[in-house]
Length: 588
Ligand code: OXD
Ligand code: MN
Image (cartoon, rainbow, N blue to C red):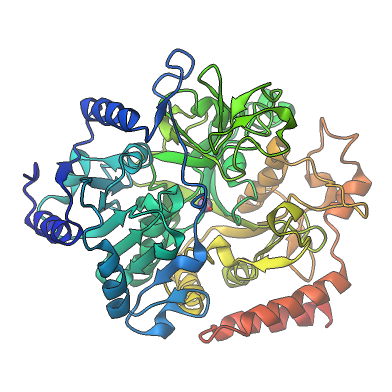
């Protein structure tokens, strides 16, 4: 029996239960008592393991199936009635085919299992911009994760009232067989069907599936932006906080930037950095004509390896209680470990597959994509405004990627449309670890390539249209923390030192600093990037190198952009004009 009175929800759940045939239906209310009960149940079934409750209170451990450790882009589909509406960068299946194909798989998929009905809210409860989803799942692990990543249960149903405006998400693990795994989005029906996986990005439907893929589709029709962006605030010594949003492809340090600790010189002056979100921004035009951003999520689903007290103390501290660890190494003392945690490898542990592991094993103890799920409210740097119903006003948007040579440390676009072009040409060079092929550029416009729920040509057009509608738009910048010297060594220290670059961007937004004009945009004058404390590492010569623009590399870059754009059927002419103008400025 439903504990809720919303008829549209109850009817739809009944329909889905007829299809999936669970033994039981459990309606999630989001209470603490419910969390304890489900945790006990999942532990009893071995779906999770309890970690040492003195050292890591409220923390649990989970292993996924070995063949189910990451998002599956080749099995992710946008199911619009017309193929061209999904566009050249998405996999497409017709809604009829997808409902039939997945419907056959969902038929009876929950037999012998319990269906959990999870109402959840993306965005703060007091915000008129928040949105409701309902996820039906046969995994307690999903319920426990959704409890951290979203505002779950009664709070979402109170928000929904008797409306039928909710995203309908259906998930079943089925048999975790990659041959029977699909993540299908039906943006025209506000619906997501995910089957055959138990991995976070494929099954926590509020995150990539709703907040980005369905979200971006809704944003276009409703005149806002759903973006793969962190949000942070920089507080000046006078107490004024300015906010920026930043998009980088996966594995370029979004979580680190969102939680950065400013360098000593800045801390001494009284600067602070506040975290609003680390992955997703929903942005709207405010009454004051600026762009305002909300983080729709309630927690962080971060990559564990590489997270240490050196690289990201705020992230590590966030995970010390009430967190879920997935596919990391399990220590004999009931705590966890991963490569790059900054502590010595254990003499013995269980690796992410559950096998005995020693430093001699010759394999990684934690999966490279192992994760922590942790409540945002526990982050030491969480912004006092992170749940503000209006969001925070965005002064600057940063795009960026991993580019060894071509992109300077930072440059500012000439205006909004040029900034959209900069975002549309974003890319990152592959690292050896990722593909075996070093230095190949993977284009990832606005870091949305895997997450745009419609034709990306239309997405660029939407960005251009938004620019025309925002009276006081943010300034747009491109950053690159990954410049190398001729021996392939990074020449910028990164991490907290990135504050120095962000400071310049925010100074530009206030017209507080001048800049040099180049063919690609405005770059800092050498003296305007503060180097106090890193003078020996970042000499004026290094800074010059970091800001240099090499014409040959840019000629190759423009050509590679052209190759990428060639596959777009609906590329706005403004993007082409921007490229022509760039070529012209470069003298090509
Ligand atoms: C993520 C991603 O997990 O972008 O956030 O892949
Ligand atoms: Mn992400």
